[in-house]
Structure formats: structure tokens, C-alpha cells
Length: 298
Image 1 (cartoon, rainbow, N blue to C red):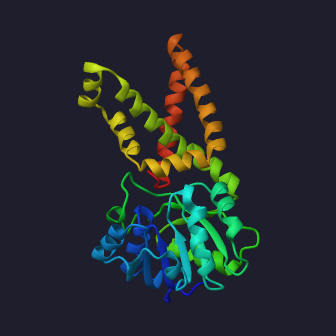
Image 2 (cartoon, helix red, strand yellow):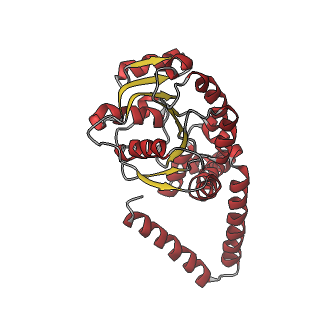
Image 3 (cartoon, rainbow, N blue to C red):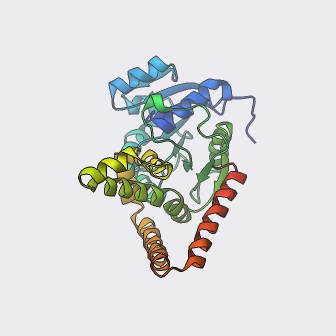
């Protein structure tokens, strides 16, 4: 058990201080004792400057290797498509016993990308905090972003228990609820609860944008709450979601196929006036919403 009166790590390095990374830094700054010293790493000097202006790190640098050499924990908060490349930049310089973790929204692809450069003396604990907004960058972070949200851990078979416990404690101090599962199961779960809804939102907004002339104008002028909800999701970072869709393509395509079958069944019910089927589907949706509210996830 980690002493909750002590810092979990002496030096925490956050590579990619965007929405998730800067929220972790803010949480650490707010007295939750994640680490005594905080270093932010970003390839953009402007982002590093902004991090320092916000006061959410003790140091911000573009030199990932130099930062990693000082770390007791390196947290990768970069798009899943570049996780392997960034891991290759930091791992050779990490001290033996320092912990590597990530916050990627896909786990099979990220683990496969990082595994070739892993070191036996640097434990790796993959994680995925299930929290976010449509905003990005260091200004988007929120000190309570992870409060009562799930963080999924997919530790490798040979990961030391002490490293897993340290990462668990970090997310618990961020306010998150923890669950462990296999990487493949994680990707299937996220395909239906996160990745497919984003795909649908992007597609629906694209359909609306393709409408011509007056009809398109009216769609935008008279957008109801349902459409506005889709546009909020669709405002998310395009590079991040491109990488997620491609990295989790098998699970996402499976869930999309199942959704399309269900959508066709609903279309048949509407065409043939099958009121009972329509009501059943609506009631099931209402029950899911009720369950989310009861679980404080809505």
C-alpha cells in the first residue's frame, strides 16, 4: 500500500501536456501529492511556454530524453499513432526502476508499438482514463477531469506489483475509479462506448455539411439538442481520433457492423409501422441513460 501522506513519485514527466496531460499536472499542483517535481515535455516550444505561464509544471522542455533521465515515472499523453516513436525517445534514458505508463485510448496497438523498445528494468503499466472533453491543449485541462470516472489498466503479465500499485494510486488520487482488464477486452469495450459514438458523430455532422443550399442552412440554424450533442463530440481533435480509429480498426469495424444491422432493423420497423419494436428500442435507451445517471457516469 502506498503511503497517502507521501508523494507517489519524486519526479513525474508528462509527455504531451494536452487535455489529459495538463489535467494530471493540475491535479498534482492541487495538493494531491502525485509527485514532488513536475516536468512537461512537448515538441512545441509555444506549448512549453504556455505550460510555464499556467504554472502547472516546474519545468517544460522540448528535450524528451533529458526529462526522461530525471524521471521516476514517465507518462505518455500523445496520440496513439506516435506512442511507439515517443517511447523509443524516452526509454533509453530512463533510470532502472522508473515506471513508464501511457493514457492511450487503444491498448493492443499501443502495447505492440511500445513492446519492441521496452527494457526489462523499466516496468510498463498501460492505462486509459475514460474522461475527456472536445477541447485540447494545455489550457483545456481540468483539475477534476478524472473525478469519479473510470481509468482502465491493462498491465502486462510480468509487470512488478509495486509499479502497478503506484500507477493505481496515481489515478486514485486523480479521483478515478480503477478496473483492470486485458488489452483486447479493453479495445472491444472502448469500441462501443467511445470510438463508435465518435465515428457516428463525425459522420452525422459530415452528412449535415453535405446538404446543399437552404436545407443545410436550416440544419445549422435550427439545430436541436440532439444534433448539438453530436457537434460537441465532433469538435474533438481530428488527429487523435484518426489514430484511434486506425489503431482499433478491427474492434471498431465489428461494432459498426453490429450497429448497422440494428439501424437497418429500426428502419424496417419504421417502414412497416412496427410500433412495439420502436418503443422497445427507445425504452432500452432510456434504461441505459438511467443506469449511467445512477452510476454517476452521465
